[in-house]
Each structure stands twice: as C-alpha cells, then as structure tokens.
Length: 80
Length: 180
Image (cartoon, rainbow over all chains, first blue to last red; front, side, top):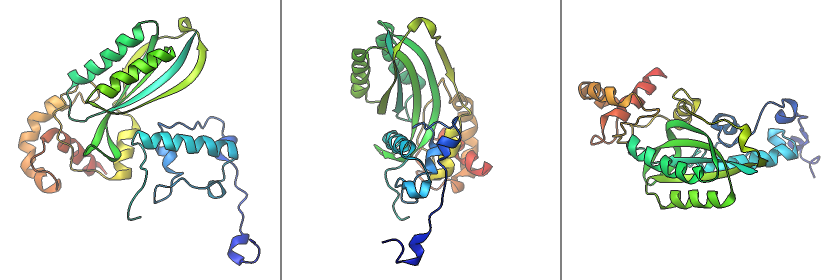
C-alpha cells in the first residue's frame, strides 16, 4: 500500500532517543521534554514520527496523559 | 516495608502561604502516622496549560513519601475535600522500601525551569489576581507589593487584562515578559 504513492515510501531509520541515552527519563513532571512529543494540536506524536521504540512510546504516552491531568500539558490546543 | 509514592498537587494561585501550609500539615499528619515523609518540593506559581476554575496559574507542590495504601486513600480524600486544591495526582514509585534508609528533605526551588518554560510555551498572561504573600517560592511577593503600587500606572498599558486584578502577579509576569 505504501509503495504505490511516492510520498509514502520515505522511512527514516530513527533511533529511539530514550534507548540510546539511558539517562533520559520519561517523567510526567518534565514539561519541556514532553512538549517535544506533542503536536501543534496537542496530540501525542505517533511512533513513526517520533522514532521511539514501543516500550518508550508507551511510557511516553502514559507520561503525557499524566501531565495533562496536572495541566502541565494541554489536552488540546484550538486554532492550531 | 512501605511503598514509595509521590503526589503532585496544584493549588489555587490566590491563596496565602498559610493555607498552603495548612494543606501540607494535614498531609504531614496523615503521613506521620506510620509513614515517612521524604520531601516536599515547591515549584511555585506556574502557568497552567488550560484553565481550571477560571484560573490560569496554579501553585504546584510535589511531595515524596513512604506509606501504605490506606494512607494514600486518606491523603487523597483530604485533598478532594479541600477547596484550595485544584488537582492532585499520586503515583506509586516502588514497593517494599525500607523506611530506615531514606532521609527527609524539605526544600524549595524558586529557579525551577517549569515556570519560565510554561510562560514561554503558553504565553505570558496578564497575571492572576494574587494576594499570595506566600512563605515559599513566592518569597518576593511581600516586598514587591510596595513597589507595585507605583509601578502600576506604567505597567497598566503593558498588561492588557483585568484592571481590577491585584498587582503582585502582574508585576511578576510583566517582568518575565520583558525579560524575554
């Protein structure tokens, strides 16, 4: 399905940032770090864009959701 | 063997240091009964990512303690009942921790990134009406109030909202806006 459309063939072989650098901890309190993984609309960036491995993407997702509860991150940004 | 938890609370921005201490004391009381308080960390007044109860800023406090499950339920019950607490979140960190091995620390972090980062991310606002002569991270509030009276006419144009709102927070966030 991907090969038929030219634009879709592009696949970056990105490394998971958290696997590579083991000091980087996913903390729901760390707004700065988490903000890099939400879109302009406030949505969580998918794994194929963020390059995270499955384990860290799950952890990231949980962290973002907790941060949203504490109003460290928004649930949604309107007008983006 | 106790379980390690951390609870983060968000309080209304317009309450005084006394009310903050009262909330914390209630928590300390519950923890002291069989648990161990490890740390209380004041992040200060931070811009919220979305409005809660029509507030745009909140006082964040992070606590770290050891205790049992029932203790957490009790703490959360108290927080739920309190009118000053807007949000709370408790996270379980580890099980089977030995209380003897951990030391208690209470500290403030007025320079924590979060405030500046939040301002930058969500934009500086005109300031919440703040009377918080807080003892904690807002230690500068009390002296700042005296200056605020004379600064206000000049800042009145810069800060566009809520003319009726109090000075101190406006002063603070206007300063931050200018620093950018």
